[in-house]
Length: 451
Image: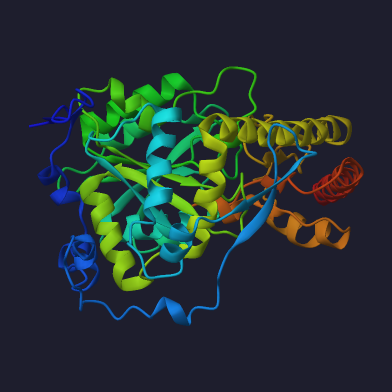
């Protein structure tokens, strides 16, 4: 039976009990035992206790005495602000720490998820920090899938997740400019063989999907949540572009937020990244979701890499605690406005050079365009962008990705993914002009071949 998170007067939200997740945990997760040393770390804080537990190096041997760094103010970009990591935080960051993340950063993330997603402590969920959201994705997939398990995956899909799922049977879910199509999910389950275990999870990027740039509509999100309850699957909400939303309509709520409208919460495992809004190189990402799943991921961390880098965590926490949530929101809005301007420049170039030669929908989040090349004027043959993009476009000085690398089952496609994050207006215009020449050449060759 669902539990109510009202023991501390925090919330009346009902959440699924720990035993609900037993069938979802992989054999590897069930076999893994708690780290015999790290599981006892919290006891070291017991007053009066003398710890002979861990082989922690003596901090007096560390050469770092202080860490300070200069940042731009989100509210006044011309103003530089110098921040120094608090000594207690620095001492903690230089030492071995908890697998789930440093307390200062973890506490800030709990508040962030309440600020943006309305999720409070005591609702059966927890937070874990990793070396980027890719790290957390790998550990989550390891925690819930066995070789041969079936997993639903939006198609096209983020190419970086495909190797993580290569041990699974990937069941493609159709998507379009409005994101994942719930009718496709319903059809999959209604036609699933009775003797075969059903897919236990759906992987999706709901904002600015990589590669399509699509943002899943509110109506579809609600329907997919209802399907998750009806067919008992988890939603792996990979959301690195949540803060890069620049659509005209208000930003749709996340799955993590929307499940508050469900009879109980606990079917959404959310992944966030600071790579796109703070720095890709800091490699800080975090997962939020049901405690049993996060616990399994933390046990993996304890044996794989012990923890995400503590020094980076306390530096990031110093910045974010200095800003607070309102200023972080201002910063993320500044970032999304930056990418909106890049999107608009790319859109103008696409219209000028590729109208009639390609089909596309302008993205409302993220940093990618996904467009279909119209390579055969007659429409008589199956079109494939692979050779055109990997050879002809490269010969003309344009590097992009053919759509086939984003297809879970490597099927042909005429689509191409292009990133607009780094280029200036002149570079964007020149790149699309060169692509126009490539498409015209391919169309001419196609017509000649059929003459």
